[in-house]
Structures are given as structure tokens and as C-alpha cells.
Length: 88
Image 1 (tube, one colour):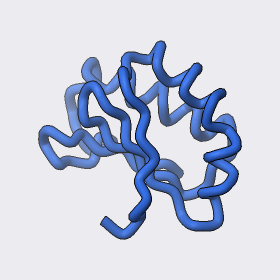
Image 2 (spheres, rainbow, N blue to C red; image 1 turned 180 degrees about the horizontal axis):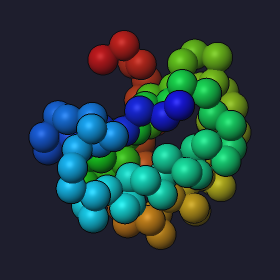
Image 3 (spheres, rainbow, N blue to C red; image 1 turned 45 degrees about the horizontal axis):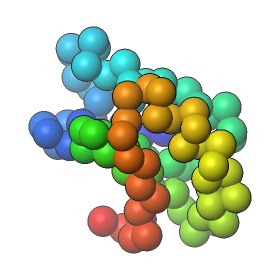
């Protein structure tokens, strides 16, 4: 499962009632799941998407960097960031 967070509200996006604003975040979640990236957490800091992954997935995400950026930017994110501290 991928956790989604709206940075502006600090709320878990899965628990929020208003869905239209989550379109880009939901697209990002679907892409992360398609690549079988385990235990990712996505944070929407418009226009930045911040991705947290466990240490076991970090190298793999870096290998997929170009592909992920190419596929995530059209969803509405200007910048894609990989969080170096997955404990924050």
C-alpha cells in the first residue's frame, strides 16, 4: 500500500472526502504501485511530489528515476523529490 499525504492539510489523502484535488496524487500512487515499489509514502507539496521509500527500495527507485520523472510530471508535478530521511 502507498500512503498519500496532502501537505497543505497534513491529512492522509485516503481519509479525505474531497477527491478532485487528489487526481495527481492518485495518478502518482497508481504509477508507484505499477512499479511494485513497496511501502512508499507520497506527499503532495504542490508543485513538488515527495516520495519516501524504505532503505530496501531506495536503490531501485534511483534506477527508475528517469522513467518515474517522465511519467509523474504529466500528472501535474513540476518537481519529483526522493526523501533521504524516510523517518521524517
